[in-house]
Image (cartoon, rainbow, N blue to C red; front, top):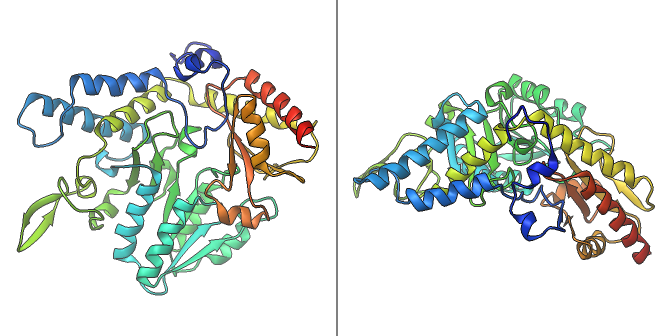
Length: 407
């Protein structure tokens, strides 16, 4: 939809075939994965129909076409991120693999006993466990940044933890569990002041407002395609070019080598050094198409729409008993996490599914966050561009009926 056309969630919804197959679906599980527009589905299909071959070093036209499509996707994605150079964009299977790549390549090469990795308690397990494994291997120490009473990062505690021993600070752009938006700009600046690098988990944030990497000032940024209307099985690790040049390979095999002999092996320059084997070619093309699709809309308008849906939903929750919105007073993205007095969130979610409402329940791979909040789990509703006010109102009605049935 061109940006000069007035915004219409219904018009956007028409671009997603899943809703033709499931016309009554109320899909509020977007933080887990988004649905895919025709532009993405068509891009992948077109690649397979017209340019399917393996990339690089091919001596035939189809291989050249595939290489052009793949490397063109890298260039377009770099432009959407405002990366300084396409070679800073590494293709991975998703956010999890991207953070593991950074941890096991940069971390194992540069961390020493006594070095400190500082991680917020908001983090997804994917931005915790890889650093724990690397800390065990290197003698580094992982320390958490505590939360305040409302489940946001305790800024005083954060500043008190910053010392020259901090080598890396890991932060989410937007909590996948509660939607909390940490104040990244001052936190990144404070981390840089003590000489630390900064890893940002952008899996949620990139779909809601995007990112300008040169303005952000971080050193690593990771995200997945499937959470921003793109394919599964593909993601990106962005890192500063000078960091990548000093990072050793993580996985080994074809594509990432310069020369191999039994006397020794030399490795390719980034990004190829970090893309062993056949990469997700069609998926990268689909990811670029998803980011092109998003760029064809006014991102601020999309975000305002998503936040308005969240606010409408939470305003309606006030009329219902035994429900608590987590981190209700904090700056948040289009995610609402709920706790229930006397009810298990899984029971509520199952009843909602009977009314065609898809939500997520559990700890959302954010165990430390739920532990800090004193909860075993929560129910999460997350909003996307194709959701409508009718989705919200139907969900509120289904939730009211569910609570009556479970009472």
